[in-house]
Length: 373
Ligand SMILES: [Zn+2]
Image (cartoon, protein in one colour):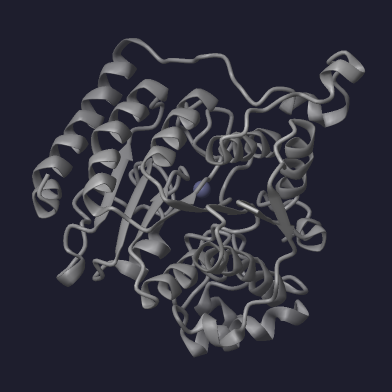
């Protein structure tokens, strides 16, 4: 099997709270779409295993893990706030520790399958918790599955690139490898001037051995496909070509989409498809994760599109012939994997483009020479 999908019905049913915007259910919606579009050939579907507790300490501190464990009963204690636990963003709910451990187990297993088998692509839609810090929870993220999997991979001698297309800066992963040149970390996102977590500026380029190996591409709110693709194309392919990673890990947050309710970029499936295709062209093996994305069906559709690009299987709507394309229920929103083109104009376009050009110029000047580009 060349493709691995990590999927757990139990995890997909988990809710932080009924009103919390982060919904693991998107994984189930994605699986429905993968079936519907005939995208599961040559694919092994594996249930998320529970991560071995020892592996948590590749990134997290024992104090924090101890605190997170005490949350598993779902009871609040004021002292937990020190660890970012029990906030509006990171609520304490029954089973939170086990949920996080199993979600991380999925990403970790995906990583090991890429190393140990001939699989070339593994995807964990219930993963991508890029904000989790070593000693506290942050931004809906408790355990940083990405940092743990990447630490394991580099300890086994692999060169890894991490690309984060979530609309929010991947601050937890940045912190994990800020002084390490074994992971080339790239995050493209809405500028921290406007959006959580308020970091991820172009001048954060790493330190010590990692100097020049941390790349941030912040963009102004309203940025559309054309500007996003411009910035991505100018920066990412040359860096990947030079760094030549064994494995590319990509966090496919769906919240850069224009219909996302929590952020302000204007991407469509067209922008996503272009950058995903560029990544595919420079990859030997890909470890993909979900992430943000608060328009649930749109996010599931974008992950399905990512699956199609990374597996090279063309989507065929198996339902169309059977039911004449009739839409039903909430799935109507995800009737197609593709959006119509969308672009901004006028002064807003000029402002967003100018900002992107400045960021690109800064990175070319400060980071590219370190990679002999
Ligand atoms: Zn996000």
